[in-house]
Image 1: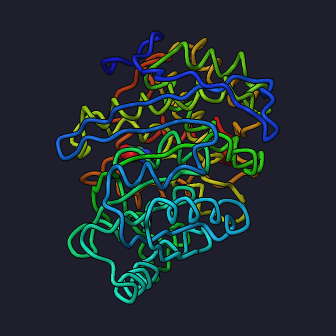
Image 2 (image 1 turned 180 degrees about the vertical axis):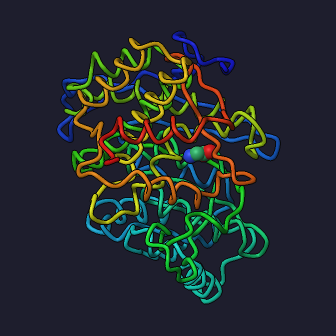
Length: 407
Ligand code: GLY
């Protein structure tokens, strides 16, 4: 399946070219650009602004979509010494009186308990129906703050300021918000401890504000995790994007500003197109789960020590093997996917073997299983994918073995 506008000639708008100046007025050695993407869904219409240095100007941009007054900033606690001060200063300059809450960005804190804390703070701080809740952080923070925004007073304005590559190109766009539930205790060792994103709401942000410069403080491992989602977008929609990532992998990892801006913009545009076509995941949005049905099984296995993006990388390889074994994907395309994942220092195999039986059992716990049948997203080439309901169990087992699961 192809989406409209996901071509090598992407339709985003470069709205301004600015030259950066140092404090002493000298022109700095690079020229910065900014990009603006429109997201148009059935329920909302909003913009994604992508601009180096934007973090110090978010207040005025938020005031353009929510009236000045009270606001709540929900931030990753690791950002307290980095970006909380400039963001809150900018909010104050724009006329907002801001409550600031910080939380450790760990899946365990993406809980109803945390939401309850946010409701309490919002009440104490006299937040009104027009007061924005602003997420500053990665996917965990965005999902949590977004769910509080979707439900407090039946919905208040929500703003996303993603600070990880993964959140910039995926999680912050499209309005999926939610929290995890603890799983009831079980004798089955394959059952995960958390039911991820089981309580949630679709609640679109009023605006998404992306400053690629903040990636300078993201460690390389988390940056690479974001690249896994970029590679996923490319496999789904745009072969030339995959080639771009391969060609400029080192420049991207060294945070070359122009290349990074292009990567984020192209990926955000793909995500915006998918969400515009299918806001509620009734159809093609489910394709964004490429690699994730495999990833969700291995991510919670603590002995593997995988971050989400690393689990997705292995999941993409397993999906590519599966697609090749069912004659959907060519050998060359499968190899190209695996090679790129390895070039950007992401794993293509499980770091230690896990029994296929354990993995298959855990797969059936995933919420994407329908009527006992696995639903897999499989690439059909680089640039297209389809949803398959009837992949035989033995092929899924072989796909796990291809990423080093033990028989
Ligand atoms: N991250 C998958 C989606 O937004 O649908």
